[in-house]
Image (cartoon, rainbow, N blue to C red):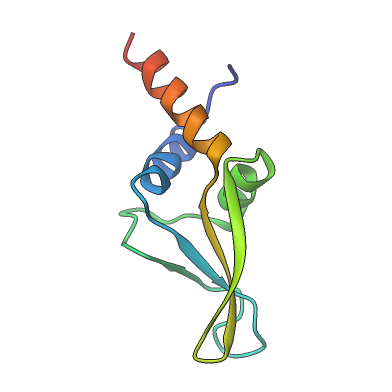
Length: 92
């Protein structure tokens, strides 16, 4: 199993607790901003979110809130499975 960086593990743990991040994709003053469902306690960078998404650990869905468009990132099934394996390997 390929190891996660400490930041990736922290973010994956946060997502595994049922949290999500909305990324504004509409042309407005919020374009490109992240809106976490709960404060992370540390800053998540776009590259970190992208790395988890590319590896298949996150899924995204299109949502609209007050007619503003967002991508909502949540933990995917493979992300859940990987995190469970990661937790078990880390506890040994």
